[in-house]
Length: 184
Image 1 (cartoon, rainbow, N blue to C red):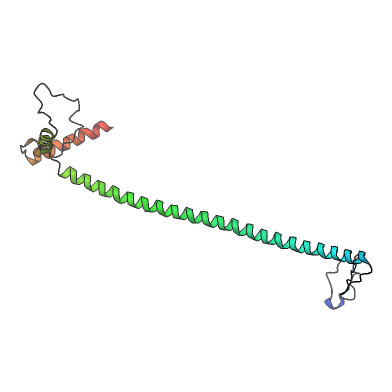
Image 2: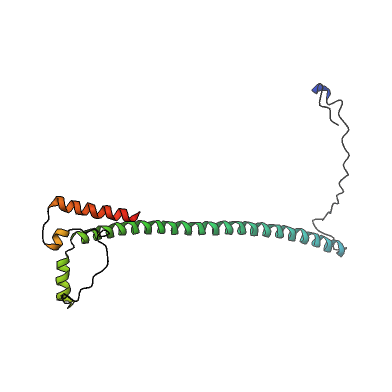
């Protein structure tokens, strides 16, 4: 047990004995620069030892190179896939922006169409281009849509008669009020 109290100067004198470690047994192989040809076993043994050490070094070198190649190939594959994902995300964002612009353009075109809508002109075009006929008195079909759910836009232009603005405004507000009451 180590002493933890006291003067540090005295610590070296009262040190505990060091543990004895087993001695390392080494064996030295001496290969002469010019081997003796008298003993063929020594030359063969020396050659075998050198071949074993060389094989171990080559094996360690190849394993290290293979490990580095595998590591960088995995890293490169991940990097390539990530770049493909980012490119696809950029394309998706670009397409979303284009879709938004097209929707705005479509809404503007629909609004322009609604502003320039003239039912009498459509009726004349249907008769002239498509060969449709004017409906007779007994050929009309009435649809059971209630007038409270119907909001008429430009009713004065469609009928050709001009009503007073306060009366027209009151009729529109009455239609809207009836519509919202039915929603409840």
